[in-house]
Every structure is written in C-alpha cells, then in structure tokens.
Image (cartoon, rainbow, N blue to C red; front, side, top):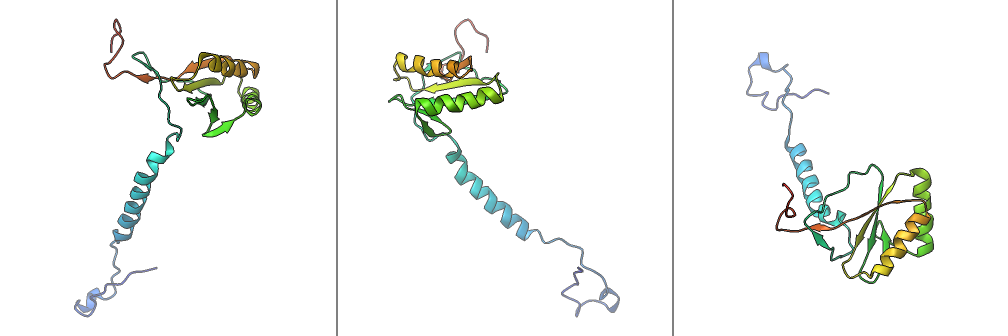
Length: 152
C-alpha cells in the first residue's frame, strides 16, 4: 500500500511520483491515551476487595516464596481465597489441590486484627491437614520505620 502526497497539484512535476513515507502517529497516540485511562481506572480495582485492619509491626517484610496462596480472614472469621468465601471443607479441598501440585507452597494469612486466636488455629490446622506446613502472617509495617536495634 502506497501513500501519495496530497498536495500533488502544488508540487513540481518531478515530485508527483514520490511516495509519502511519513507515519501518522495521531491514531497511535489516541489508542495509547485510551489504554492509559483504562489502566488508571482499573488499577485500584485489582487490589483485594475485602477490607481488613491488619496488625502492624515494624518488622513486616514481604515473603519471597515461589509458590504461595493468600488466605484472607475478615473480622467475622470468614476465610477467602481470591476474594471468594470458602467453607472449611472447600478450603481443605483447595489447599489439598495446591499441596498436590506444589508441596512447598507457602500459606500467607492476611487476618484482621479482630480475628480470635482460636479461629486462626483452626485455619492453620486446616492448612497443615492439607499438607501445607509453611505458614506466614501478613502485617502492615509501622510508619515509624524499622524496629529498634535493626538497621534500615
């Protein structure tokens, strides 16, 4: 497909056979702006929709586990995987599937600070019953900086 000059009437006769080799970037910029707006709108929606009041500690560090599953426990003690509520039986089946696929999967618990200790023990017991023994707790870092005695 060839592009010809639009101002061929004003051009010299020798320029009439030349092809126009300029790329029109306006449609490209339009599409990129639309994609940027879509990204800006959808990015906040990609975070978990379950509101938690996580416990805070200055030693909070993200895990570097290769395989992990994140269990969210809200203030009422309901357990969620991928923002889907799970019964104890469904949780056990799901964790058993993960343990069968990757035995070294780490269970990361994001629990509200108001969740009773007994409920957390039940959930950890379910994970261990499924064959997952690596359990980590997710917490928010304090705004004050690192823990005393630790270097930043």
